[in-house]
Each structure stands twice: as structure tokens, then as C-alpha cells.
Length: 166
Image (cartoon, rainbow, N blue to C red):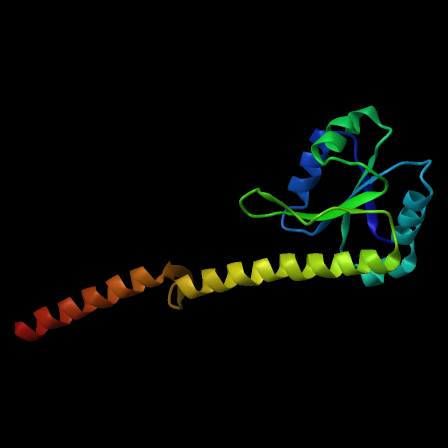
């Protein structure tokens, strides 16, 4: 069963995002009287969902809860269920994929796969950038920039030249 956290209002959503930073989050706007919403929730609570969507974090908002009215406006919820995948990145920017409305297992699986590809690809690109800009000084286990390596090499060359001229 996927962990579904029922949230109330913008502040609880902000707290949820911060506590799940760098995680893929499913945001759902739903209602207890909505048949497709209940099928969606039942699908997420099924045993298979944990296997199919390991570690998925779910922020669940009931549109009938007055505390969620502001979020419904912010995210322009027009129909139910409305859902989308988000991720709070290292710079505290909320990255979100386009919203989907209604529910079918096939459509949800496709959206989940797009979220994985999009957000995991961003992580790989960030790691590639970071790795290409860094070098490891094994003697001290510190990470230093390529610029520092170049400066150190130049200093060593100058010292060797001074020593050779003496």
C-alpha cells in the first residue's frame, strides 16, 4: 500500500513538501462523494501499488475541506480527481508535471513513468554537472574544484622551477 497523507491547507502541504524534498510526490485533489476518486484511492491502497510505485509519496486533498480551498484555486482544480506529480528540488523550487483529470490505471501508470523519466533524468544531469566540475583529493578525502587542482598544479610547477634555478 502506498502511503497516502491526507493534508489540510497550504501550510501542511508546504511542510509535506519540505519533509519529502527531492522525492517524487503525487498530489491528488479528491472528494468522498466522487466515484472515480474513490477508485483511485482504492487503487493506491492496493497491495500491488506498493510494488508498482515503490516509495511513492502521496499528498491527498479533500476539495470539500475549506482549508484546501486556496490550494484548489492555486492549482486551478476544475474536475475530480485531479492529480499531478511534483518534486521539490534542491533549490526549493516546486517542479510539477501537467495535471491529469479522471482516473484509469493505464493513464496513471503512463503519468507515473513520465514523472520517473523526467525527475530522474534531471537528477542525472545535475550529477553529471557536479561530477564534471569536481575532483577528489584522495589524501584528504575533500572534494575540490578543477580550478583548485589547476592552481595547485601551477603552484607546484613554479616551486619546481624555483628549486631548479637555485
